[in-house]
Image (cartoon, rainbow, N blue to C red; front, top):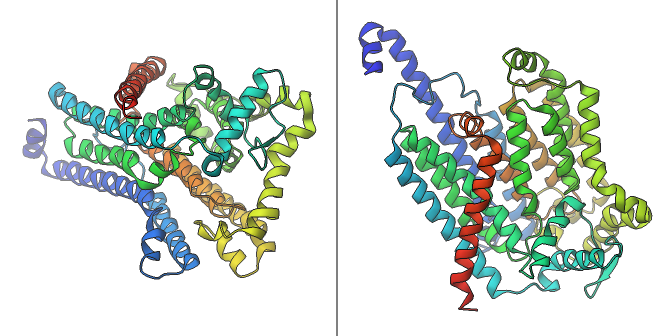
Length: 473
């Protein structure tokens, strides 16, 4: 009725609102479609090879398509706050929210069933998942009073190459004598559940078309083939909820806690260093916005030096006990072993790099291995300069962080496919925490109760599905 009255009294104002609404819908649908394509495009080279395409060409084409998709995602307008997304003149629809929520829960159960059935059928095996074996042995060594950052025989020589924030959480399933992969399954379900919750919020606000799109995104997270195959050997998804926490804190202008969370992400996975320059670029350029938020009582921006100190403490702190214990062993496990493994074995004795997205496989096929690191440095520096010139607001900065992580992964020494899953998760989270989804809903329900409820729901789904499957294996 409100829109009808506006149309009668001021047709021009009505048309402006309608045009703005159509523009917002276009941005929403295009963004969600590109996010879905990200997950499915990882299977493109396998499809092309069925028609006789050689491996290098198939993955090079896949790289170009993946890059084009994410450039398009970066260029799509992200200022959704200017319009009347939440439709305050409309009364909420609990029945529609309940229906959408049940659909989201159903998708979650389907995804959980597929992943658990897969890992129940395939036990942890070093031939498939040597990192899970190394993490398990590292935990055993730590609990027995030894240094986890030592060399292990699995049966080949291997080191623990990850920070404590990644592998320490595995102590919980290890102590409970559970399959370690329950933890990454729960983390992957968390990302899918975020899409389901966002769809439910949209359903309550009568934005049912957008809710259906979010359910399709949730379905993509749960059913895409690469995550399905990765879940058998999955060891990295354990920090995906931390990506959500970082994105949410950053989007709400809580720079100090966001800096701490970013530091913890780096203490989990070194590739997350690609996000750091973008974070501090916005910290420098975003003073006007943060001062406005401070005046409105919505947060206070710490000084840049204090922000950097927070970040460094969180990034370095988890390593300190192990550095004091045996610094040389820690350094070799985290840094030296990777270069020795990749350049000394993977590049020289296998064709694994040729079956990856990115530029490294192509450079190696041309005999240009000396230029791999030079290309990465040049690409990243150029991108950060461009980011300095282009970034103007927070939602945009999060997408630029996703693009930075994508470029870093594409130009790394060994760009394995699951590096890109981190990129896609970051972009999905950055999407769902914007208004009208979780961006203006979560601050009202509070973060801690929300995360607690999510944890209990995911545990209930996980153990219910596991109990149903246990009798078959």
